[in-house]
Length: 79
View (cartoon, rainbow, N blue to C red):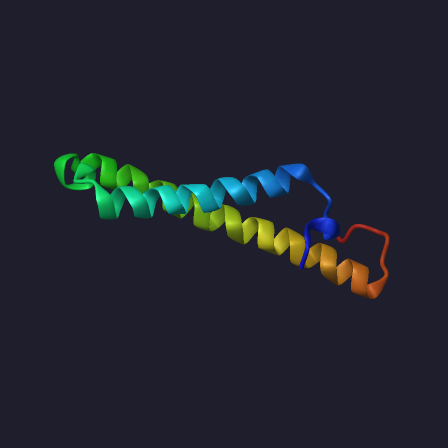
C-alpha cells in the first residue's frame, strides 16, 4: 500500500525513523563492541526497539482503520 491512503508526511517520517533506528541498532550491535563495553547502552537500545515496535503497531492499527472506512464508504468516525 502506498502513502496515498493517509497522505501524511509525518507518518512517512515516522516510518523512515523507525527503519533507520532498526538499521542503526543492527549496525552498532554487529560492527562495534559498544554493547559489550556498556551494558546499560544495550538495555536502552532494546527499550528503543520496544518503543519502535509499539509505535509500528499503533500506526498499523490506525492505517487499517482508515482502510476499513474507505472500503465501507463511511465518512463518520467510529466511536
